[in-house]
Image (tube, rainbow, N blue to C red; front, side, top):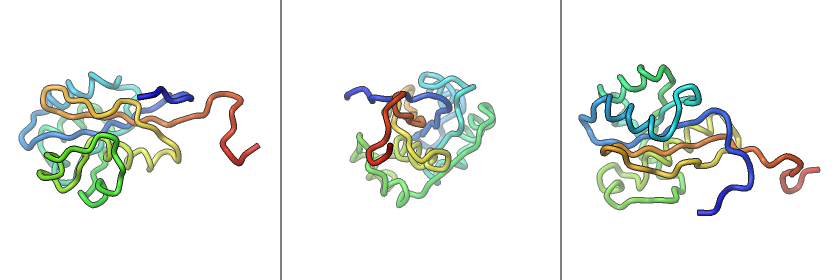
Length: 143
């Protein structure tokens, strides 16, 4: 995957996919593999997992907002790594990447996937960050 020609800096949105019954420690450990707590703006997942005890405990531990999305909302996002098993289990081909992208849209107009979906201990995580063009480079159609 080519490197973006810009800076992905500042706060991070972490999307998370996991199986029912996943405990807080597993979620926390997976998130810590990809993001530092001071930079985490929120955690995001599919609506049917948002009330899971382990996930809620992890959200509380990080002290950040929780965003959840329906399978239909997640399916509307073109994810770079769709998965047929995830589609069969949840009704959407991607949870972590899509949830992170959708949550990021609540904060920024332009964001990019910084860490594509990665699996740690059975928990899938993806990170999205605000994208800023390199210094001195304008957007197309701007001066």
